[in-house]
Length: 181
Ligand SMILES: [Zn+2]
Image (tube, rainbow, N blue to C red):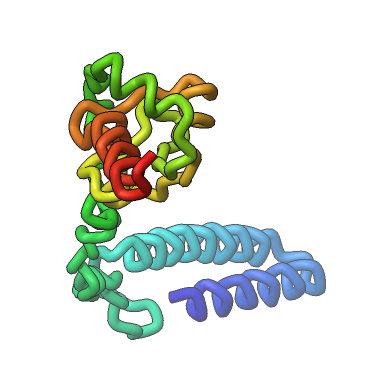
């Protein structure tokens, strides 16, 4: 089609040149006619090409089969999302939430003994009670050892669960009894 148009243009040019050479007006008109036909052919050819390019009729054009756009390539197979990346299973929460125990109710006789004792009790940072080593409130934590008199001076109070004052007073009495003083 385009080739034909080109030939017509050449023909028109030939007619034009011939018209100039011969001075015959008929040849001019022949030239004009050839050019008009060539233009029409070019327009039609262009439309056909653009139509073919837009996926329409496979008409002429360069017989390349309209490359079907990759509709077939399915989604990537890695659809299994690792949904488990969430909550990092924390270390089986130690009784960190355990509320501070009540304050041990100490008898005055015990208290008078305890205030002078150097026996070691255990305290927890940021917690107001002091404890004995086997107290449930120390489980899973890192207690700080402290002489009981110092703990009291620092404002710590005895734990009502492990009752350090009563136990320490009993120990003190036992020691006194053993030494006979
Ligand atoms: Zn305790």
